[in-house]
Image 1 (tube, rainbow, N blue to C red):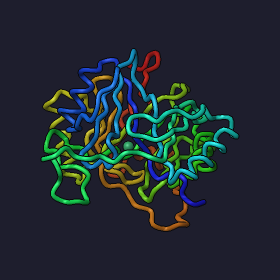
Image 2: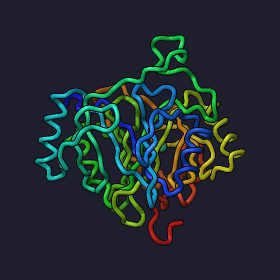
Image 3: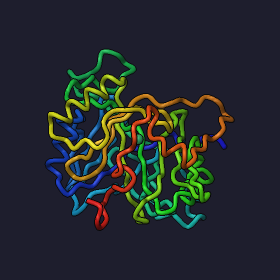
Length: 315
Ligand SMILES: [Fe+2]
């Protein structure tokens, strides 16, 4: 199948502690405020080519309100909308969000809300703030973790398989890696619209809940910046859930923590690139996953249970 989705993002996150969350993404993560509209602030990393990649919205609870997917073109967007409607998951056309053309909303089989679009405005730096290189969207921001862009999103699903099938069969995602438990069920699926080994991930919701977020990951170019991000989080009093290490799956280098609103956020780099068009899907077994991450570090228990919005007994 020819690519139908160009890439993932932007993402809209909800936070019950808006001011603290905004301060985290601006001061600690180093993102820039691009616009303000009602209860939402639009933010960008210095390497985001679009005007924004994160919409932070004040709400009663946490979690993901919407995940954007950019279609590869206007014709493809129209065909996707028809097929998603035929699958019974469409929610209709809307005026696009800030800087975007017409958008088609839908829910995945687990209930997460998505917005498909084709046209979007590119970021134009204000006069005097242009980067030296024409090939860079914005000037490097040497503040906090100075994250470059939104990289990938991991969603929780009560049942991974239907959402994985929908993404592969309808949206045209490639399935690069997955976890198959001893009982034959799927505990996780790592998919991508690009050669980056993971872009859109579904893992099993330990609470059997629907439509929850596991984490949103933001890119830095080097492992050293990821380690520095951990030092910055430490001084800023950010709750570090998992200190820097390397994932076995997709080989991404990570730092995980909880932003003030409760959402799990990752600073990431590395990860394998898949060049082969016929690359076989890597299937991880329960015994292999029990060995922990790439270098043997055991995954903290909360990583398998916590998501947003929180459910009862999941503080
Ligand atoms: Fe991740």
